[in-house]
Image (cartoon, rainbow, N blue to C red; front, side):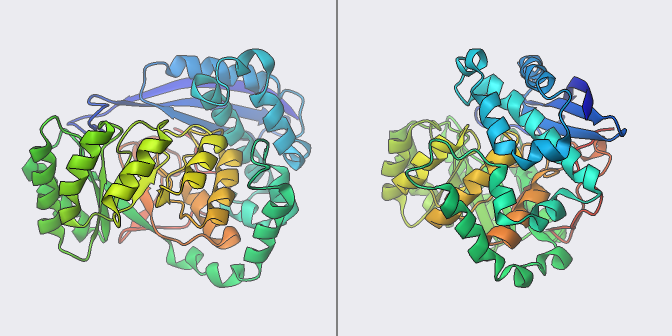
Length: 406
């Protein structure tokens, strides 16, 4: 039974312009940490990610949800976790503060992720191994499919997983090869041109074949110059992604993306406000065949549904420490599978949790193993930090979701 709960506010100062983008110029990486301990002495750790300010509020929300799980047996809880998730997300007073977004939903993500970590640790296996061992019905039991009935029923979700199960053994080879990564740290917004050039060479030396540059400058010519520096440094075969972090309005996005197309970006990420579905539709039409990557700040499965229905996203970047945790991440991945859109998670937690989830997505759901974002700045703070060799994530073997902090 869950008998002890601890909530902690962890914040880490970044140095030298690391983590900066066009909107968040002086970020402080932070976690709202939930720890759920049972009477057998096992502790599950869950994270939600913020940039510092307000992290204490997320911790208060996490504490509210966690208290409602006292006395629960983890196996019984996870057997019907979809129902529990919905009851927590729809708690009448906290729901008013969302619904299903913002501080309260981030708090729920932290608690949800702690539940999945505790579940895997109790079974003595890495989270990816637990998830791929579950039958389709057991996976779907952990999901809340409410408000999705028009596009994804329980029966359809089970059928998608059953269909993918036939070829899962072939895709399991990824466990030995490792999951490809891409480097986001080459081009943080505050880095000067020479730092960007040097970081690109370093990423190539480390085996990365894809990398990302932050754009969204007040002077578009700075973005264009830096984008050309990256392309000229890495050559034509390396995938280069561009990320504006919501900086542009639609006319600005159409104009600057028209210029940025010249470096043949693999995608352009978060070009404008994340709630403006129709602006993304118009931009996607204007810059085709260049595709958009969306989802870092999309808060829940319903808005992801709307983006998928609109057909404007080339890649979905659902983040399990931004939506309601592992459960909602899997729900959105199933939606994306039905709509034929690849999932390439945003990695607000430095890849610790998502290295497990992309393995599940690929093996059990049949998503293509494209690559997973890698950001190295907080690795020293984790008990079992991600391992990258030659640009590839090494499959974690420790029980749980790799989210325990030192």
